[in-house]
Length: 277
Ligand code: PXL
Image 1 (tube, protein in one colour):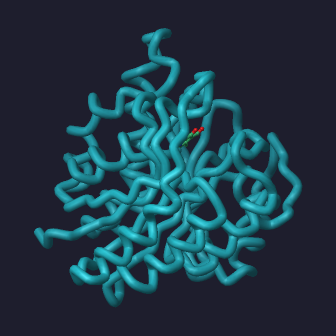
Image 2 (cartoon, protein in one colour):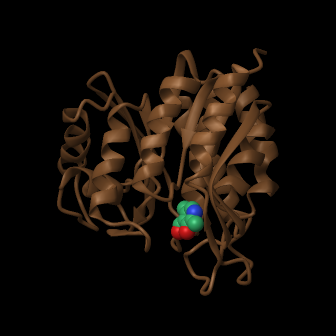
Image 3 (cartoon, protein in one colour):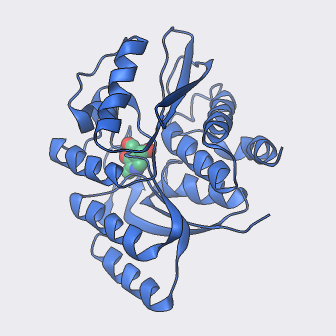
């Protein structure tokens, strides 16, 4: 097994099972060296808690980059999630230039909205700036809400294949190379993921669990990065991470006190097994 090194850039929500507290353990469990660049520190995530603290770390980012450049530290993959500001998006562009090995991959989860709405701290200007980061990424992992905000496509709750093709085409027209579009379902009982690359679309459809759970986007993207960096194909990685996320939701759904995230630790063995098969 080749030992790889990933950098993940996103916030630390100290409590709540999302962003870095999910990405670091999941990618490490995949037997990959995982470095972190925290974009902000919050006491909890922002979806469902009130009165959370927020310490912006934007000013630290260029200093960390400069130090790593001096040390000659480079990565096989940089994976970004929830970022705090447009300035941070600009710093990620610098990370791609200065910290990614030749042939390394930039994987971007735009992590800025869901169900037709942007998360509370973001606006349309941020979404358009995020689109410029997606344009220079090797792989992006958006949901349909994020595609709409990045391309101007009208958001629909119910849609058909023609609408989804238009959504993906709008991204490809921006020069985006590879899209892993999550949360796409054509019937009430199913959802799935579409992998679009080189003019070809592949769809992995699976069971949908009615109530959406918080943090599953981050669980999905982290598992995808783990599988992909370990050498799985794009489609295998998309499928493995979908199955893992589904298992995490199943392991959580009976516990009404656990509304803020999923018990991703309880299914890590299934993820590693699928990667090593
Ligand atoms: O899971 C995405 C996410 C990450 N970080 C913070 C969030 C959210 C979603 O709401 O609030 C701080």
